[in-house]
Length: 380
Image 1 (cartoon, rainbow, N blue to C red):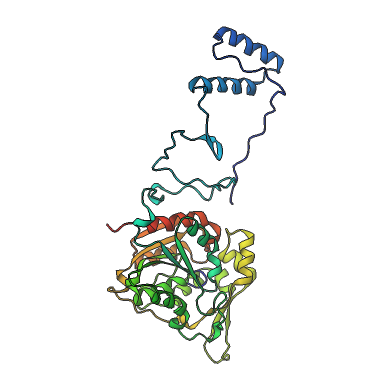
Image 2: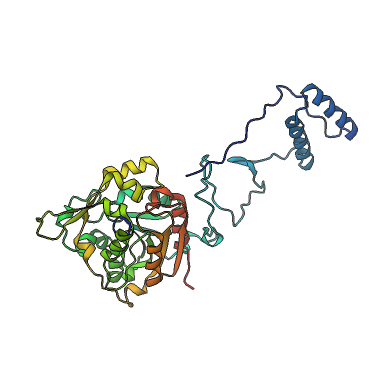
């Protein structure tokens, strides 16, 4: 479990300098022999410019194939022509308005992971996501995800668990998992009768949503574990934390145990050393988001980490579960994610290439597509 629990731009081809002036394009009725002589003459005048010749030929072909009164329409990129019939392809994907070159670490998703454009939001069991952060994080970490979901017409609620984010409670005073998860259970308890949500838990948030699934299984349509602690009955988060700490020196070095009740008492919280945050959690994350995290992260309460979960097949087991693996994760290694999946298999597993432990920062668009796709998966 993470807290517990490069991009390459395609090189631009060198610019080819066109001649300053060209003769006006010939009439469409011009003979081929005369057209050849004119092209030959132009080559002599322009220093045999291959670029000029290709441009004129392309223009002639384009206008010969289209009526003169039919405009050519372009959508955002002039390299991609759009149909002029006014009808959109049913399988067309939404195009980003960004002019930034696509990162080679953020490839197109596989066909089975693409958003189904034929399904409307009204057809979904729910369009309401409840986002649960990991240990040390807060609701602030979901700001990109919230914006993307709301722009797509979804509802998004991000929770500050007790002692996290802007929640004023002292993390060192939290004594159990129930107290830590209370902001989440309060939201679920207040949902109108018959309304369901999709829970998304990151990192230690996986244990938190598991706890909520046992209590409010009838209010949860789906649960998404994002590089998260997806525990089995009788497990606690420390079990996973120990596996990761045993295999990663950075994880051990980053931990600082806090003993607010004295050195003779158990630890009350875990702090994380800020100089090691980037290597551990944000190795693919933009610098501005690393800076945000470094001033926003808080201690992780320790007693909830020790608490073993009681999960039943009739309650927890009745909720549809999905897991999203982060393949460049230095905090919860891929083999550990795979062991969690093998011990407690979900309905479906998705992958995020190029994502570190914080995909809401490093791969927000790809994460958004997966969340939307999961929301649209119907019962078989």
